[in-house]
Amino acid sequence: MIVNFWPQLFQQLRSLGRVARAAQLRLVCLIAVLAIGLSGCAESDLGIRFDSPSQGVITQRIYLGERLLSLSNMTVKQLQKAIAQQTQSVGGSVKQLPNQTLLISIPFRDAIDLEQKFNRFFKPQAKLALALSDFPTIPTQLAVRRNNFLLLERTRLSYDVDLRNLGLTGSTGQLLFSPGSLINLTFHLDTPWNVKVLAPKQQPNLQQQGRQLNWQLLPGEENHLDVAFWMPNPIGLGAIVIGAIVALGYYLRYPTTMPESMASRSSLSSTNTQ
Image: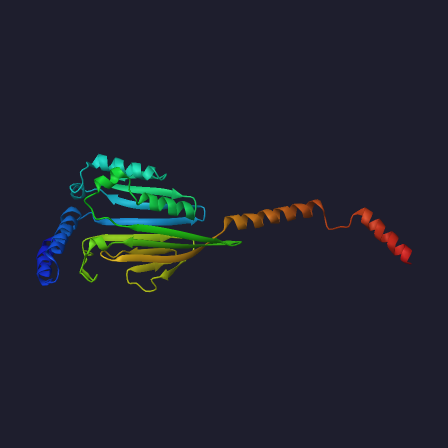
């Protein structure tokens, strides 16, 4: 795929007569980074899993191939250490898998904790940012809102990823070239119950399978996802269970039979009436 890619690239560059020479050079540098440095490792798998309103985990797989490291000023161990420190700063852990792959896991307690940890993790600290300074910056933002009801909790999640730095745009803002054939960026969301997509309503790169949502991000574009889903509210359910136990205990301790004092008063009242 890479071998046949370069002739097509230069042929397309020649056809872009209105594109400035600086923009063409930027495109060549960007594609060189993607084609040479990221081929075979330009895949990002990011996911959020909700087990309950009070428990979940953020996961991400990172492949540290030699071609990727050739674009960084760090060795494998140094980059692994920087990623581990960044993960631990938000209470997560890193597991090393075969083939220089890292599995990042960041647990969260609730929606507020998820939003804070997610946005903090994807704003790298100085050491990690320096290691990846040669890569295009990718602005990302996650917003989570929740509404509590008696037995249920509604969560609304909005995720924005700006991948325009991974493409070439013209002077009017139109996308002239996107390296989507070279990189694969996916985001998946797992919820206890089915999830409803609020925006975009129709998108070919969005697939829903029951409680799991898979989203294929588009390089060179602004990606926006807005979803909502319901989860059982453990606080409300717990309150109902506690109330039922109290009512049952009261019933067992104080039966429905009338106490003797009340019965004697009732009998005396009926006698006086007669």
